[in-house]
Length: 83
Image (cartoon, rainbow, N blue to C red; front, side, top):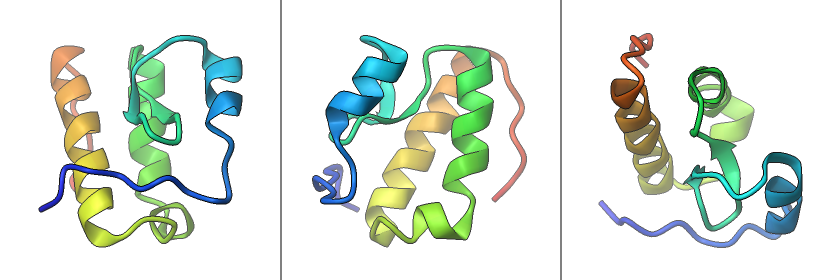
C-alpha cells in the first residue's frame, strides 16, 4: 500500500482550508475529509464510503484515507460502522 495521495485536478486545496481552517485532513494533499472533531470524523467516514467520492481516488488512496479516519475515530472514542 502506498502512503501517498495524489493531487486531484477537480479540487482546490485552498477551498478546504478556507472552509475548515488549519485543521487535520484525512486527505491533506487535497484538503478533503477534515478529522479534527467528532462531527467531522463521522462525516468523513460517511463521505468516503460513498462510491462516487471513493471513485475519485485509487484503491490504495481510499485505504489510506480510511485508515486515517479510523485512527481519528479511535482518538475520539467513536465507533464507526464497518465498511
